[in-house]
Image 1 (tube, helix red, strand yellow):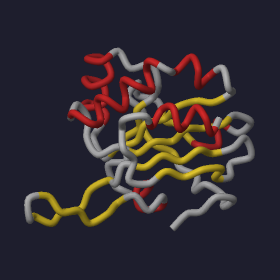
Image 2 (tube, helix red, strand yellow):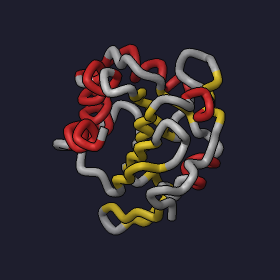
Image 3 (spheres, one colour):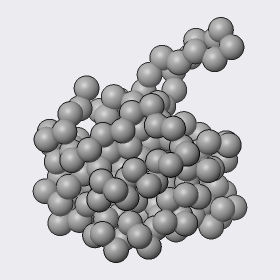
Amino acid sequence: MLAVGERAPDFTLPADDGHKVSLKDFRGKKVVLYFYPKDDTTGCTKEACSFRDNLGRVTSKGAVVLGVSRDDTKSHVKFKDKYRLNFPLLSDDDGGVTTAYDVWKRKNMYGREYFGIERSTFLIDEAGSIAKVWRKVKVEGHTDEVLAAL
């Protein structure tokens, strides 16, 4: 499990705009890297819209927001357009990044076990190290926690 002070695993993923995004592209900036289970679902929409509504506050602290799920880029485009999201959504369709960040977990819902993304956020510092980790994120108030950490 990744811990504060460790080097954040680098990655290159396709974004909703058709470009590739690499973590190393953001050296010199703080990165709020948040993993969410699924586009256009209740909790994920609430979380994304909270980051959208507070993006100015995040960027004023020298940070960027990147959202990651296993949804494909077509799904990300629809989600982003529907809610006018103002930050990149990245597609980890093969699961390599969700595995590297240890957010791909066994879950249980209504007695059915399955694997999925555990809602998690990593604050990565300007040098590419993990500065703060939130696991099993509760959406309500989470953006405020991130802003306080920034």
